[in-house]
Amino acid sequence: GGRIGADVPVSGSIASPGATTATFTNPAGLVGNQGARLSLQAGSEDPMEDPNYRALALVGNGVFGVSAGVDYKMYDDGRADPADAVYGLGIDLSSLGLAIGLSGRTGIKNRDGTELNAGLLLRPTQFVTLGATAMGLDDEVNSYGVGLGLSLLDGVALVADAVFDHELK
Image (cartoon, rainbow, N blue to C red):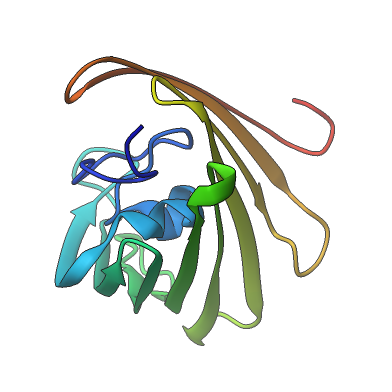
């Protein structure tokens, strides 16, 4: 079977997190980092409104993956723009077919506190990957995610994810 988190350069899912987005979706996917790289990301929940910018340094060797950077949101309506330090660690326990990860964000501008998130990836066969995340471990978990990835062909996977809160909504 293949390594967990390998060969997925960019994606945002729970069962198949990309190495560059795993800090935010499922930190176990950080094990997919090979070598060192810089990731610059920009996006918005609504097209062209309240943009979000991220810069991450990523380092890994396939067994360990680490990320550190900044997540900055700019509000168009005059609200104070918040910024967070973001960071994560993923560890591949390939002898168990499992990867685990922990990530967090700590307010550095117009936001206080720290939020911690955990994730895991389980590969029972070379064709199936199961993922799970829990967000907000530092206080009361505020959301969970689960996912299933099926490798159909080399480089082609069918992925389904679901996210819900502590009331299963």
